[in-house]
Image (cartoon, rainbow over the protein chains, first blue to last red):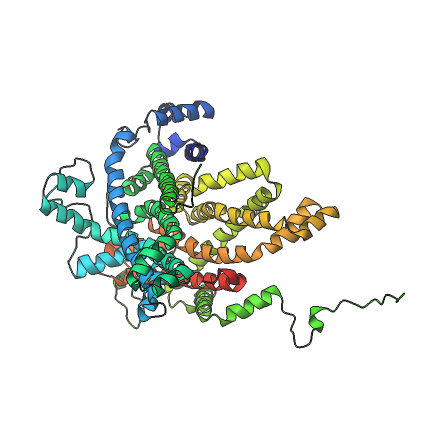
Length: 324
Length: 299
């Protein structure tokens, strides 16, 4: 199934740029551009060939790892995209870690102590969390923690006075590899606000799903049996119940991880985080269509693979699920 | 041989002490008892009233610039303060309700119409038609929705109308899949087979039997989708891809406010609160409608 979907996605992205009313080259260069300049760019983008020839060339390029060239910088996109992608991956992974740890535990405790004050507060916060625009939360965080309290940096990924030597472009790993603990803490500090903002919605959804899934499982006979055997509530909840309640939670986690990549665009804009979302956003401003096209395709491909990994995890967690 | 006596079938209304309550009546009874859902409906109604009565409620013209009064904190003259052009934030939020509700409602309406049509056709005709439409849905769902919306607006050009179109397009597969699954269930029902047996046309079966029986999940999903659409429209506005100045779109207002975080935090607080409350209202109402229309789903 994955190959037809990947091909379909490449078609969607391919036709997106061709759906621009008029000549994209004219749109990119502006109304004042000379005919020669427009013709040259049309040729450079390959827009003067039939669409099927363009598509075959495009797919051929993709298979060779050629994502085209940025109009703005002239550099191959495949080369310049990695630092941006690494920044987004670092931010998304940190956000997902926060969302899973806090969301799953809040859901478990809410189910464990159903109808307690903790349950009510956690669920009201979860409801507010799913209704809150992350870009607003990001601004509020900046105002409170950076401007008012001066605890954390407002924006960016590193302290500009103490630049990090990039090895993998995943700065947490790079600073650890170079053994520079001061820089490591600077990276952590820069990561806190954007990752918490990005984590809020998935955290709320994961908490709600964990709670309802746990409540369902905790009514089961085998849980009553486990309690009757004298097992402590902690073991019953975290070992017996959680393992059986985790499948729907895992679905939500998978979906949310993919959605994080989309949400990252907004978070990256607020916190000037040099990620792929910011890369695409800037490209929109410059009408750099090859970058928009490749950026969207790469995020969508990552999204598909995350869902594939989640499907495989189901089978690992629940032995009743088997794939042929 | 005993003579057959024809006795008229007793209609349900004739059963003593029982009221004839329709499916929708029962749902309304359940919805009315759900206090949280009522709070949600109240919030939604509040913002709808604000949007309708904006010209009478807003103390100032939302476009009126008073540069001498720029970035004023909340006061008795300007309850929510003023922005960097000296425009009254309360008035802009009141008028902004029109934009957000308009985009939320009409984008979802567009998704419902197109999604339902595609879903019905896919579910009813099956085979290759279903194959093509379902793969199209799979492909669209493979993109993070906001990213696809950004891509569409980047191509169409930034404007409120194009943001609405983009949001409508990205939500089509959600409704399409929902309706397709309903059609697959409903078309096995005996009354559909009976309708086919008496020679009813496909389109009549689809629009007189299958679509009305799929309304409940569409309404629930639609209400929740309005909440998402409002956030998505605000997100596009925040990125400068939605409403353009001087439209008082809440997301755009937040985007303008981010340059004045230090001097005028109120410019950021109130538009964000407005988005959150409206979205919360639709979420609570949607959850309540789901519990009322499909009690099996009740958590």
